[in-house]
Image 1 (cartoon, rainbow, N blue to C red):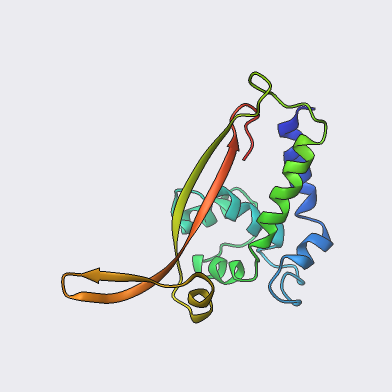
Image 2 (cartoon, rainbow, N blue to C red):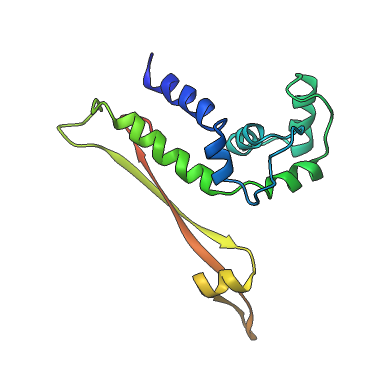
Length: 164
């Protein structure tokens, strides 16, 4: 089995584990009952980041019999709030460790080759976020007209081994 398939199989198993689900849900009662949106389905939907409209994606899930009942985009938005972002961080760290565990990686002249990209992310306007990340003033010709908080997102991509 190749590394790509190993990572896919690992991800499928990991997102179904009760320990993983319990650690990465917002509240203890979240994802406890059998509903249309279970933890693995929400994870996959978030991971896909489709360019289609959200309602179209949800309708396709119903048409393709991945879910039993049609659902609204509002229902998806509500269940998404039960999902902690830490699931992606934990899974990415485990996937990278698994990928490099056999120490069989491609190198160029003995070096690993990385591409790095960074973007500035505008964060929601919330006192806790402002306290953590600070405020950047918004100015025009009349002076300061507002503020926003932002953070840098950076991704390092292993060019030869095709893993972020």
